[in-house]
Length: 380
Image 1 (cartoon, rainbow, N blue to C red):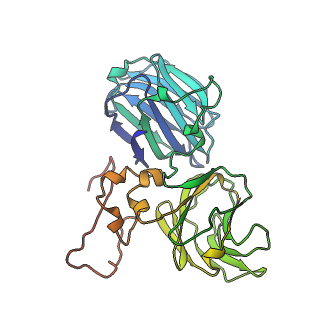
Image 2 (cartoon, helix red, strand yellow):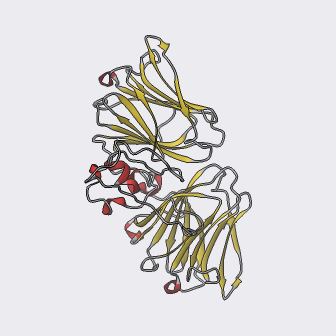
Image 3 (tube, rainbow, N blue to C red):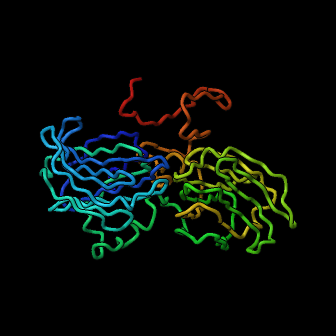
């Protein structure tokens, strides 16, 4: 994928670098909120409201997917296809392949529709997304013909669709969509300096799910860290030892929303488990059972389409430098940071306005690093 755009502020309008041409593709990964009514994707001849629209792709949830073009300030003949692939509260992937005859659309790996060109491709310069949708990531694939498709109406072959776009490059031994309840040995065990990566989606009817770091695979084995978000309540943290639960701790569940995707890192520190959700530190849980005794990982509950894997050499590098691959929710930061491992006291995606004490205060030869995106409607 080239020119990935991570977590765009909607409505999003931007120039397509180099324009579009046959054998290119656009891939969009998103989630529909529970209240979604419609959203749209537009290939345009310019960024203005009155510029022509070569391809207007407009799913209206519970109705149809409407397709059209807008030429000389007027809509042309409308086409419509089923909206079945789009479900409120569910994640989706859209793949739009630019072909000589038109725009070929796959949704969740299944061929969905074709829209013949009405405006020459060399006039298309702008890409826009708006509406009731959350877009973690989209981007362009310059040479689509290097990837193989099977017959129409069957799933796109390869890992492009079956594997989440946001899987970090550093994740080892990844497991895609394990059956829940899932229980398995952790190869080589846990150790300080590692991290465990999780990604999933919260169904609209979700009550909760749990992740357990255990000393064995049986129900009676000790649990070193029990992480249990109960949606609409709290995230409960605990350990289970010698046949009984120990003192429970709880933190806010606001990071987990019905119908939304999430990603997490469990960082194994010398004295605790440090948990990040969607780039923000959620909590820490002090070790009650030595890390070297943890041999098994268990997952169960209502989260679906999960993925997890291990990062052998965790550092703050992964939170700032490489978010485009880790979270699916940031631009390519690696080109912006000369030595990101020097960053300390990271604050990721703070809620604005933001106020906080500076740990240790300022001193000569320190530096503060800021990175952000100016939204399309920014004033100051």
